[in-house]
Image (cartoon, rainbow, N blue to C red; front, side, top):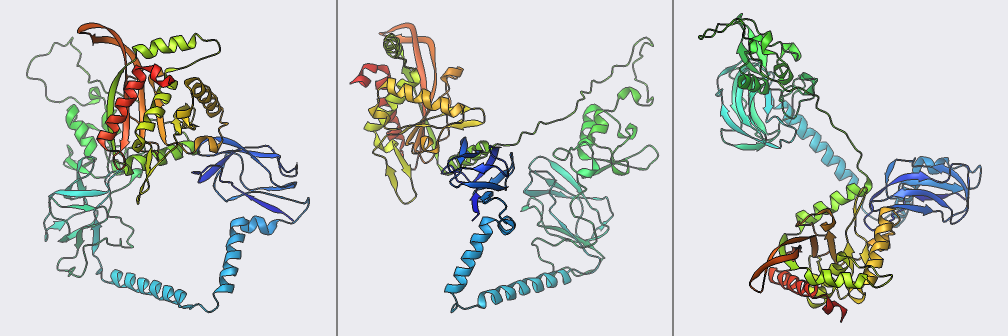
Length: 562
């Protein structure tokens, strides 16, 4: 019988995976324990082995493809076995059908009016929509607050240039609207009478809120509310023309509003607000510029590429100019805007999600202390003179932090909402930079290890991390985290807490600098460390006391050997 294999959950935080490489192909014989594929999770690329034997009949996710956990990955069975039903419905559908059958069997006596109620509600909603649509009289156009920038979510009406009762022509400027990027002129794409103003000057509303109503004079629009109005089926939109106006993809900085100026022949010139602003700054007469936009509309690039020397002769300067002098041309920088788009890996997506959750849910605060590293440097040198022994400053910081946590257990905690969990064990997370981002392998029971033991574990875990060989169990269970950028020459920085931890220590480089010792200025070596704390679990005084203890251990390494 065929066995369905779904995308496995290879880490506690994994929500989707990428098949990095298939080590078997359809038709291959598979033994129990054979490696089927390498799967990229949010933390590492891991080998996935088969728990079944047979023939690989179907591959559901190709190399490089991303799929959620539990999606159909592969099917193993007897050679020639019919698996069409399994492929068509995949395992999740099968499970749903099974659950549905079980549910039907166990709920025969349950009331069945839910589906009818739902149909009635949908019917009522449809009737309501029809009623709303019928409330808009013929010829009336609804104008909503437009989205005038790619990031705009709400707008403020700075000034109305028309008032209720005024006649509006297509192309007239209705109002000046303040967006999240600039104050822009908003023109009408309809003609008629301004029957209603929905947003007063100075008011701020969400995009798509009713801004104004234009229609035949005398039309009663009192029945049209101030909520989000449905656009009419006339084909016109309340928002200004989109990116199609400008083939240079300037949507984020050039909006589809049009300013008008007077051409030399008295005709009308169409120019975007940004083009007009640039022309004004550069002293360029828009009448001399040829527009490349729709209907000859002048856009940003037209003004930027316009050469002043190409302008027709205008009035002469009041001061005489020698015929040998050449007119000074304004330098206009030119270039092509471009981006390189890199697909985010599963690890990068998860890093972004987890750090965002931590930063925006945990109230961070930061405490910085400067440590005299003179004795630490001497001690490290002496320790490393012992054969086959190698200790780094980072190992010393991890050991000192673990011992300080033993004296300040409140820092070794996590917030659960209803309670604060204070860990009695000390598992140190060590931030390690890898090609795709950052992973945090865990040194468990670090307070019970010597500095040399800590160093050996960190070296082993960091090597696995960079080779993508870390197992999920080696990245779980941290109670406190250390992040060290001292090797890059960074003197001081802050980190985002690695949840569910309550704190993270940021370690800078050792700096040679003048210090005061016994009343004299001498050359010293100091290092700054910054503790980021979750204020829900760690009060300021608690964090400060932890740093004081950490400082004592680092400045007197012999105390860590006791």
